[in-house]
Length: 200
Image (cartoon, rainbow, N blue to C red):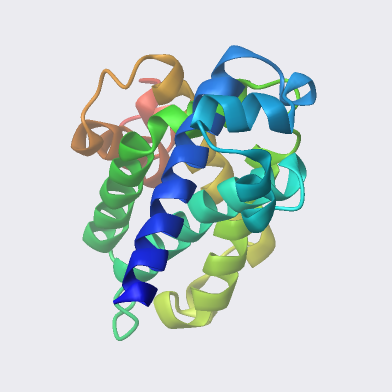
């Protein structure tokens, strides 16, 4: 019973730190945030903070890792490893990815926009690239791939991230399904089709 109380206390503390950190990085540069700022906002003492993290940099790393791990888990849950990639599967993956981004939009936007946070976008791309590279033999037929796989993965991950950032900047005005449809038109039918230059 005592262990359960300790676990609940730890969960509540982490939630308080998460909320405090999110609000602070929305207000000012990470460089200007101190442990004192975080503990006062979370309404915990410094000793409690140091039971969880060595410093604010370890907190930032844990914060980013949690978001990236959630994204990775989302991808794993929505790819059928026993089937080759289809348009429907790709669209379903996109919808679930945008849903995850929507649910976590406050934290993701804060990291993207904070001038003191370096490399978060690059970390997202690295996570996605590593995942697709690991799964490529399962979801694609290597004999049918017409370009170097590194370029293909770079294009796919770059397109996802760029579209996601624009969507967040536009206050997420489209639904997950609508955004996935936009991605499908541009990626599957091509930019020339999307721009009205060529027919399907």
